[in-house]
Length: 68
Image 1 (spheres, rainbow, N blue to C red):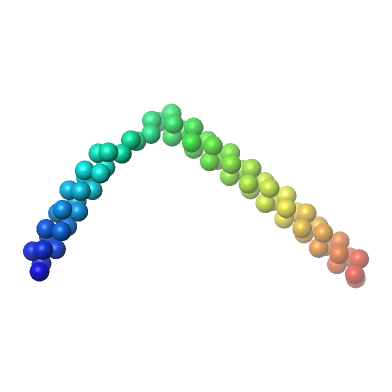
Image 2: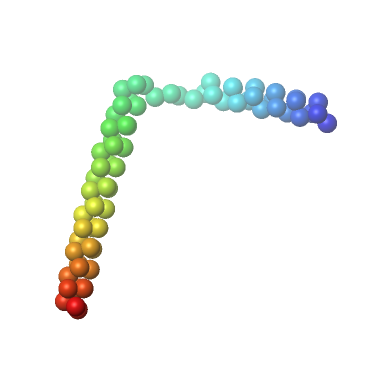
């Protein structure tokens, strides 16, 4: 039983190594461009969330002020 597990594990590593050779890794320039895109999109989404939060809090404060 233990011998089978060792063979399965060895087969798994061989297959993994074979699959990793097929991967097309990005160039450093592509990686930098993609990183910049992710950072810019994160900044835009964060600004939208901040703006929505600011408007929502202001609206709630206004409603509380009118009611009180």
